[in-house]
Image 1: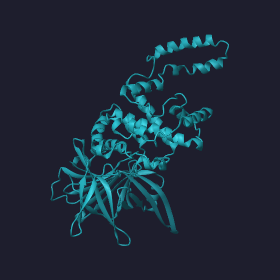
Image 2: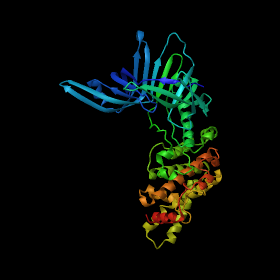
Image 3: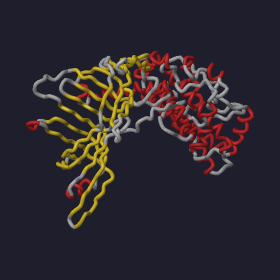
Length: 504
């Protein structure tokens, strides 16, 4: 395990003559100032100061690749900077007088890599690299720190409940909290902490495109499982790797960084209503989180379609503010995708699979319709003909019942997916929202309850598919029944809501 020490790092900046590649055409010697972030939650950016000729070309394009070198003693390369894609924006020119102007362009690099060569002659390149992976905040993944104070004023921290996980055979990660200090404008030092994953890997994995498949892909899937269990969207932001003669920094910028807040705090419509609730922000208690990861991560990888599980996780843990309507539609779409995946894998799409046979049966049905509805107009019969293919498609309701039966998923205590008695179905609410109908503020609480129930349903489904017992989670039937703050509606409210939806 790599020990965590305090890191002092001020804001870094390079001034380089960059080479930009635009569809195979290179523009060399573009002056550029490179800004690297102090915080792992920030992103790097460039400021180009091109000549007039260079600006005339760059002002007409949106993106390019980027390469720059910084030479040291004897013209040996000390720093290599590369980004496969840089988005160009904020293009402007200031004119100071005749034939005299100054142009600037902002660059937003994607997957920027900065390689600092410490010594390339005296030392043999090591085949091992020490990796500090920058991860967005997640209180459940972070270890508890117990400070130990020295009589000299030093502070050391003992780690408690530290998670170590074998993501792949070549990537064993220990999650830790590191510290960084920066000097403020007034001269004072400001300390901040950030979540990291520490690992020792083969240096070949960080030198070429192997890191996409060997590091990023499995790590992203692991953090997706962690996101679900903690109800906090969590992502890899980049890393710093060091060998005996190089330091490599890799900055991911091609997505919105999660805030580190739990989904409950970000998107709970009525947080004050839960002040007396036993409801927890995490789906899985921190004491059982290690066991949850060991169970669910391999199950995600071995699932026939892991992407559909990841998409469903994103729908319940998006990591950003959403309206109730947006949350509801996103989660319902993911529920449909889960059922569709089950439908395809179990041949539950069509009553008659053979297309030719169905076309023959459809012709017979059309003849019957024409005979039965002979007194109706041709247009009226055509309307029915247009719906015939739906008869051959097994209904979502039947597939959902088989889905729950196959996985032994109990949702009887939740808001029903389809209407039952005086309770409107979640599918009916979805149909209204998807067609642009707006729910009155009078019933916004009922819509919020429906949205929460849909979330609990998807969380139960995901846990069950990945083999983790629902009874050991925050959405167990026992906990929901005992908590008067959740699934909180009356029969009278349901009747009024049903009447309102039916009249829309």
